[in-house]
Amino acid sequence: MDIARLRKGSGPTVRRMLLGHELRRYREARGISREAAGETIRASASKISRMELGRVGFKLRDVEDLLKLYGITDRAKVKDYLEIARDSNKPGWWRDYGDSLHKWFTRYMGFEEAADYIRIYESQFVPGLLQTEAYVREIITSGGEPDEVVEQRIDARLKRQKRIETDAEMRMWVILDEAAVRRPIGGREIMRGQLERLIELAEDYDNITLQVVPFAAGAHAAEAGSFTLLRYSEFELADLLYLEQLTDAEIVDRRSVVEVYTKAMTRLSVAAATPDETLEMLREMLQDLEKDDTED
Image (tube, rainbow, N blue to C red; front, top):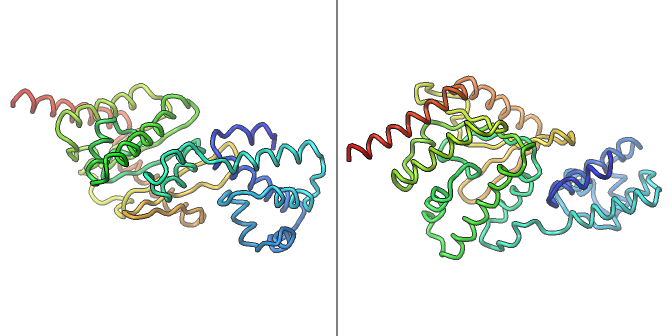
């Protein structure tokens, strides 16, 4: 892999993932086991696995020793890899928010930032990346957190959304249950703004595919709840599955599990209204809101 591609990621998570991918590629090319690699850096095979998946930071000495073991002796290349390792240990922008953001969520944010294809199924609310500021504020303030924490969480969510405006190469495929779109959050004015935003995204953003699963579809492939799939297609990294609960979250890379959710996403796309039908549904919902305002 060209070193320049390793530098492409804007955040530390993608750099760890890509450097880990390179280390695994070199190890496998030499036919060296994880156990043998671990012995070289005085660590376990599981530590090598975590390094190769980009789940932990890198010690420069460990990277240097592994590259030597794998036969990478070119000084310029070793220097470049060490620089990538050093950069990968720097904190991401989300660290500026301190304890206002849950640690399990900041971990996810790094993976989200690195993904070039984000697939979301949401059953309860409009996904955070697509929420208007007013909708964001209504959702976050309902948690009863102190004002300072609320403002920082709002700011962080809006900062995550900037990628939609600035990264044309990032693609999103979002499937919403009709309940997520119809649930009244903060009253008609907020819902009007949110529906207008979804319509704008569906109409004007070629890299965003939006579908709604109508109530009429009945039972469907994701009755268990919301999920997110992250893909890193340019770098041949494994897809990741993100599952969020009330007090924590899980990032899953087990292929068998990820495949189940990938198939569920495909089945949902069949059960859902087409993108054009979805756009018409959203327009009708907006008209209904405006009609109610007129009647009042």
